[in-house]
Length: 147
Image (cartoon, rainbow, N blue to C red; front, side, top):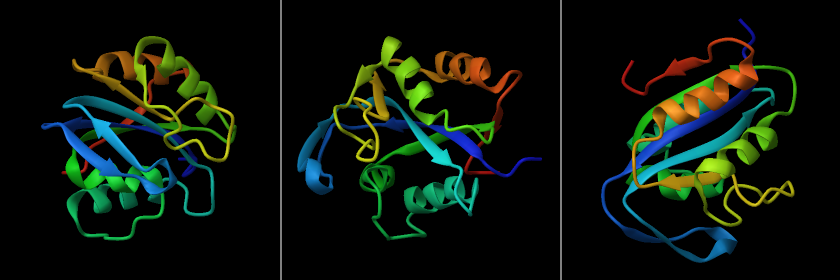
């Protein structure tokens, strides 16, 4: 198994919240579902996803990326992994932006994307999985924080 690639976290926020997120300052997040496109092409590979799970659960208190500020307030539904050596993170983000609401500037300080975080008031799991499967060339790998 290739231990590197890209991923999409699917999160659920149960209550509206206002959060200060780095240089983006205070953002309003509505209750609903969020999809976050990320890269795991670095030396740690998909260990980054485990780190996100640990930030969400409170095991890791470090706030390094934009998503780290939102994670502790959410329920992580799952992470969808796409094994690849290609930098497809922005391509996936652009596909997500077609059907989901963009959270401007979130998670994309190192690229030209509008965002890497997307919102919907309804469950997005199947929609996001279909998008990821198009990029993986077969079925993507789904992992959950509780297993």
